Structure formats: structure tokens, C-alpha cells
Length: 205
Image (cartoon, rainbow, N blue to C red):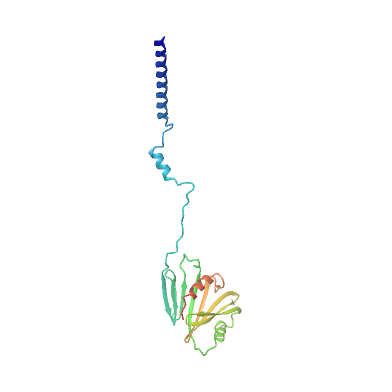
């Protein structure tokens, strides 16, 4: 009787061992319960966490290279990418680069002889109304100041074209600063105001 019980116990232990071994081998074959492979771990590490956000902060450390220009008693500075063309002895034209937000604009600066005894308002009126065939209407005018001088910003229409003109004066010259939209006559009243302000901020006369 005891021998039979021992045989039964041994048989059950053998069955359990075989079942456990078989289960282990099946799990190993199917990869059940195993940790991630080296490749899987690498893939997981390369994927950012859903809670992680990239912090990209724009910097303003880039310095814009400037160029200085002087002619007939005035000096100004503009980015080196802007073009400065001398169209005559006393007239130059400034064009922003194509990447600029005001690329469609230009500024023409002309110098004329002037003496301090000449009334500014009379000189401006004579200059704008020099051609009697042109219809001139003034909308507004205001005083402006520059480093070393003063002037007037004139806004109106010339032959119904919206026009902005700035006149600056020193002891020897009067300067006409005329912004305009390239290809659209003298229209510089609105679209070229940013460029005009950039130019005037560096002007010294």
C-alpha cells in the first residue's frame, strides 16, 4: 500500500514538473512575459514622452550689418543689403532688399542749395508748385526734427496721387525726401511709412 502511494506521489510530481517545463518553453518561444528586446528598448528611448514639449525660444542676437552713406551734407545708415544708387550728382535712391517687408518701396533724396534767410514754407510751396500744370492739394503738414537740423513732413496729393514728402534744412542745403511705391507713381503716403521712419531715424544733416 505504501509503495503504491509513493508511486502515485512520484507520478504527480513528474506530471507537474513536465507541465511546468512545457509551459516555460512555450512562453519563451512566444515571448510572453519577457522584457523588451534591445531593439524595442532603443525604439522606446528614441520616442519622446507625450508630456515632453520642445522649448524653442527665438533669439534676437543677430546683428544687422549697416552701411553709412554721405552726400551733400547729410549722412544716414541702412542695412548693407539695401541698395543705394546715385541717379545724379545731387540725387540718390535707396531700395530695400527683396527679403524686406518694404521691398516694394524706395526713397529718393535730392539736395538743393539753401540759405537760412529763406522762409521754409515759401521754399516748400515753390518746390511743390513749381509746375503750374500739376494739381497739388495739401492734406496735412507737421514739423519734424533731425540730428543737426529741422524739417517738415508734407502729406497731400499731386495730380490725385497720394504723396508724402519730407523736407529737411540746414545752413547750406534743402533736402527733399520722397518715399514711393515702385511702379505706382509717387504713392508713398501709407505703404512706405515704415521704410521712411527707418530712414529718418538715422538721418543726420
